[in-house]
Amino acid sequence: MDGEPPDMVLFEPLTPTSYLDRAAASHGDRLAVVDGNDRWTYAELHGRCTRLAGALATLGGTAPVAVLAPNTHVILEAHFAVPWSGRSLVTINTRLSADEVVYILDHCGASVLVYDPSYAELIDSAVAKLTHPLLTIRADDRYEELIASGSPLRTTPGNESPLLSINYTSGTTGRPKGVMYHHRGAYLQALAMVGHMGLSPRTVHLWTLPMFHCHGWCFPWAVTAAAGTHVCLPRMDAAEVWRLIRHEGVTHLNGAPTVLSMLAHAKDAGAGIGDGPRVRVATGGAPPSPALLRRMDQLGFDVTHLYGLTETYGPAMICDWRPEWDSLDHDEQSKVKARQGVGNMISHRVRVIGADGADIVADGIEVGEIALRGNNVMLGYLNDPEATAAAAPDGWFRTGDLGVIHPDGYVEIRDRRKDIIISGGENISSIEIEQAIADHPAVRDVAVIAIPDERWGEVPAGFVTLHGGRHVSERDIIEHVKSRLASFKAPKTVRFGDLPKTSTGKIQKFLLRRSAESRVDTAV
Image 1 (cartoon, rainbow, N blue to C red):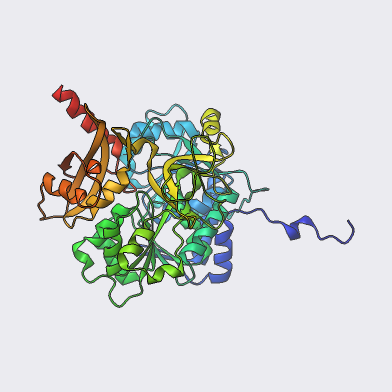
Image 2: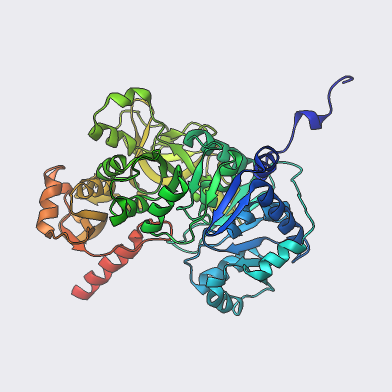
């Protein structure tokens, strides 16, 4: 109609790379990145990313660009430069084997790989097995020369749904799936993280969560959107984390409960934050135990529990704190904080559904499967339409996690579907047992799985790591659980030692099951 403004006035496609444009324009002189002795302002970061984009655009056609690097400026820059080059980004888990890296590179068809020099041997081995050509760029002087040679480029999508990136699942039950993200989802998810975690120009965010994992829950874009400071951490080391918290004035960090446990029980923890501001922490994965939450609070950390999957850009749910909970005692607050909560501000309402596909009763007792949908759910699995269709058979993504809904609408996970222990016809939550064991003062880490039992079908088995210098018996742990839970829920056996973990700190229960099965086979 005459007099209507052109569409460009009303609509601009959403893309997370626009957050760096805004930060450079509004906070260009402020500190953007701290990486060891290197420091860059937002204007400098913007310049580096646009030049890297220009250089990448001249290399390897239009196939994805893969990055294998720890939490350094290299992988942070890739989150802006690769999309600006007109390519999709693939961040690779740094703890994978050469064969696993080969599978990912072949599956996504990457034509360029940027890698940290510390992984040179791994890359040499992988490249020798590849079935297609790959240009490798070592992140050293050659990388800096590449940036210096590039002409600034900012390719932006014509709409919001093109492929932004491909994130690979852990693949613990088979080949990893390539989860496809779009620009709109990443933009909105980052915005949700800004709001829920209170990010601002005062934010100093320490990278304790790997950026290769769900793009660090979209925090590379979220911290940039807030014009906060990124503090890089190439290797998770509790002493270094404590040093950076105190030296750089860290205000925010993220990680699995095992990361929190490392910080809480490190010798460098001392009296905690001291006179500095309290640190806001987002944690995902297994629910943190009330005991761990109490310890983190004493040290000066405000912990928020999040829940999500690779398929949901990281945290799709948050335990959104209610002011009326401030009056609860510490034990009750810890229990509430361990809930997974409600959908984040850009998510659709979370459902918990029964076997018939209908919503369960919100009574905190009936158990169903958590189902999600919304702007922060994946485009689908790369080259796997069957798995994509199976994941969301009715337009709701099935998470595989079982939980309850409390009367206030907050969801609490009871277990992964594969982790529920069915003993004598009774469903037992491994999480419930883990939290009871974790409340023992000698316990540092714990995992509970099902093991076969001739009488009951299967029974709980505990795997425990103790704090250094502490000693406790199997019987002590079992009786400790019985003092808190029904006797049939107590583990029948308890084994002590280090627990196998992923690079993001999640305990690998499938390896514990494999170990338990091998012991049974040996006994037979």
